[in-house]
Image 1 (cartoon, rainbow, N blue to C red):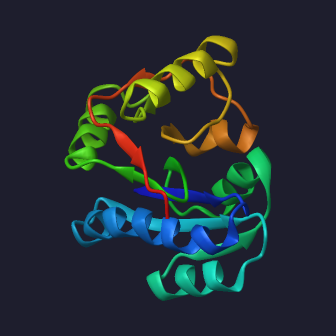
Image 2: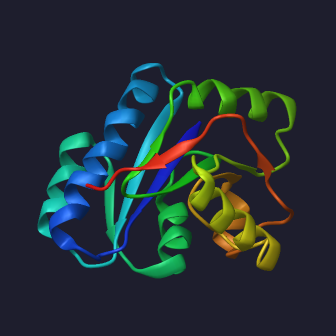
Length: 167
């Protein structure tokens, strides 16, 4: 079972809830299909609106910040595999099929749903070059490495992409 761990970073409070809603709008069909079993929202600011949105969607809610938030969120995850997202990340159509295919074919390796577009892709490639074992949004990874705080190896880039909603 796959669990989404979604980090709301606490910046631009007015936009965080709408960005989170955009992320949930893409994840809910995966829940209906039985592919995504659970979500954990990790909120750095403790925003009541974020907490209400998490509750309304059936997601667990936790207050924690930074990269530590993903580790703590992984601790509450029900699934053995996680997809790490920031509020506002919107995986594009067929993302679930790309992740499912990855899990079937290479179930011992982390994967990345890369950002769409040149600027986002360049930032992500730079992050991989300078910190390939660092946790970051877009990763599909077993729970164990997230609990440990770092990847065991470089992720495989998936064909599906994700965009950032402005919220």
